[in-house]
Length: 140
Image (cartoon, rainbow, N blue to C red; front, side, top):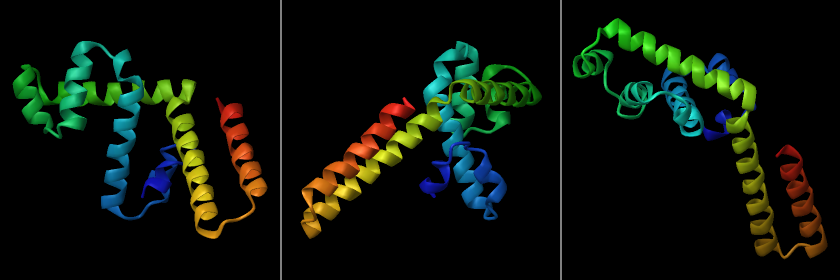
């Protein structure tokens, strides 16, 4: 499942996935990553409501009761936060870059594991790692 999230545009996976549980889990992961990267750019009130909905998995009604606002108000605030976070990602691409670098680091780990297991040519291993490292630097 994590492989699907590693796509450059996170929302593309939603369209191609036919399993509702995986889609829901992927959406939660996407929302969490966006919040991790851009959450501090929200107001304190937005952060509190969004955290309760996404991270604490409270219902709109529970949040509305605690915050003293309507259920529709909570729904609108969560949707607005979601659009704001997605807008930041569309402009800055920090989550996409993070996932791409993470994937490349995993590739380096696989190369090293292969080297340890099969004692392949160290020159080839170094060249492969250098190629991946150059791709990481270029992406940043």
